[in-house]
Length: 124
Length: 153
Image 1 (cartoon, each protein chain N blue to C red):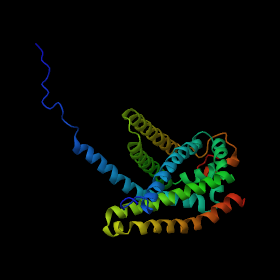
Image 2 (tube, helix red, strand yellow; image 1 turned 30 degrees about the vertical axis):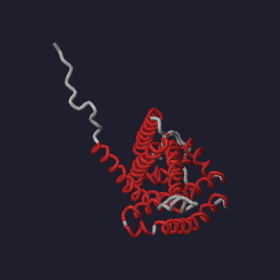
Image 3 (cartoon, each protein chain N blue to C red; image 1 turned 30 degrees about the horizontal axis):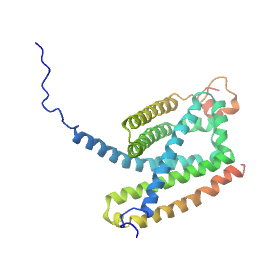
């Protein structure tokens, strides 16, 4: 016997809750690093260019793609959370809205990835 | 003879109204800042990664070109403050969920608050004390057009 059904447990909403937390933590730590690396513009142009040059390598290019993916998911799921808190309609359809978030995610990454990966792997 | 002040309410609970309001304002801030951050960060990502040469265009001269306009200084400053407070508030909620021992919880909260203040102060200083044309720098690394315009080259 499965436990009594609840609004979230084990379904789309719970997984999206987990995605929201993990992407949030990842973005937070990236933000700390990103402010530190940008601060190098105040040290010297040489220091900044050297460190930011690392972002243009294939490995960091892929990490950046992951970062953008995390931001897109966190952003649109954040809007879903606001909607579910605010409108009864959205509360009733919160599970369908999870799939709307994934749909927007796919469309936005389809627009972003070819261009970004072209920059990273295609040279100029 | 001195007498100790009488304790009228020795077991008075902490002010629930204040605590409730703090959580409520944190809740409201998280939503309001989240919506603003979507606009700020998506524009930031679009300009830096989608236009021109994308990530390859980002170097000292690129930053100098952007921060020559006050709009982008204030844009980045707003993004810095809202993102750090939003992120710290989110991390605070996660710490409250998982760190059960008061000592661990308080230590983590302090670490979060200190890193938030340090990063905001550092980032703000960098944005507003930025020098686009430091003397003695190889001209190739500078935004030559901007530095000529500023009479620094």
